[in-house]
Length: 223
Length: 296
Image (cartoon, rainbow over all chains, first blue to last red; front, side, top):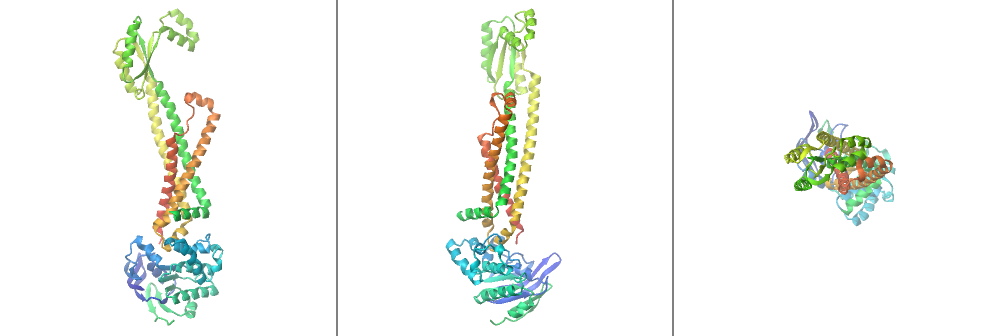
């Protein structure tokens, strides 16, 4: 599903990622871990095309993200889901409208949107809050809305950048349970985190970065 | 298209304040430019009437026969630059002078009946009243030999012409300045308005929206705001025009004659709509494109 070949990402003199080669198979749940500044977020940004590598090759679902032209990026992003630490919701729109946005963008018909949005909100346990304004929800609920938006198009892969970073323990566990459930439905999930407790509680393969270098990768965990 | 209209309406509902600010600023810019255009239009009318007022007085030699005068008049009327020729007899000239300056009547009586010569008052067509054209025309009719003197207020014509040239240059400079200031005002305000919606742009980009999809409602909103601003600006200018008419009627009648203060011509009103929409669309397009260029 995801292949990296000798990927380097430099900002001036500084290498944010240095000669990273990595393979993540379809349906895997992988933690990208390491201390702050290790290159976790940079790796995810390269994978969804927010940044371009300085050198090397990245394949996501067979698409060479490093070589994809700017006007083709929307196509790539429609096939991946992205979840951020700060949720990135539109607070003045309802929960349903925030989730529907990802469907509107791909030109989904209204009937499909009406059917799909409650179904996805049901998965994240927010079906009853569909008409609430996103800005009125708790942090944990907002992150669940963001996850719902990320999976509403049935992406093959889900990238989550510190999805529990702004949440307290209970809410973080809820979010991890949802991500795990999504993975069990066949979606490849890549979570950047440095929360050791959560990784121990929800054990999966870990790839550890330090100073932009991939220093350790554990074996694939059994489901 | 239906989806774009719906998304535009939703954006205006969600960001009503920003839409009002954008429309207000475009309105202010159009009022500024429209006011300048209205003033310019009316000043040009006044100056045009001054130019049309230029005429040539050709004083006939005394003792000429009526047939000779008629022949000269016909000759002049046949010239392409001449709009009209009027014969003014000695008596008419005297009556005209006495009417304007009654205290001169005894002096004229003392000088006798032919104190003021008969003349031909020649009105020229538009485009033939420049100092050069006038000088050429007067030079050519002097050669006819029927006139004692030919007068066209050379100094006045030259002054008016210089004044018109200076005013025209000032108008272009001031118009350009106002236009550029209006453009900056609108561009910077809409840039700030789009900046306030940057999260929305970023989120749409991240969920796979194309630039065209993101831009479309902004462009439509810009066009709608431009049209609304043009309507508002026209209403304000029309109100100002009516207000000026009622308050300054006497002064305006003196300055503009019977024509009164004019509102913008129909094409000027149309140009305001076009300018408003171009401003709204252009500024929105530019601001969104700039933000999209910075987004991941």
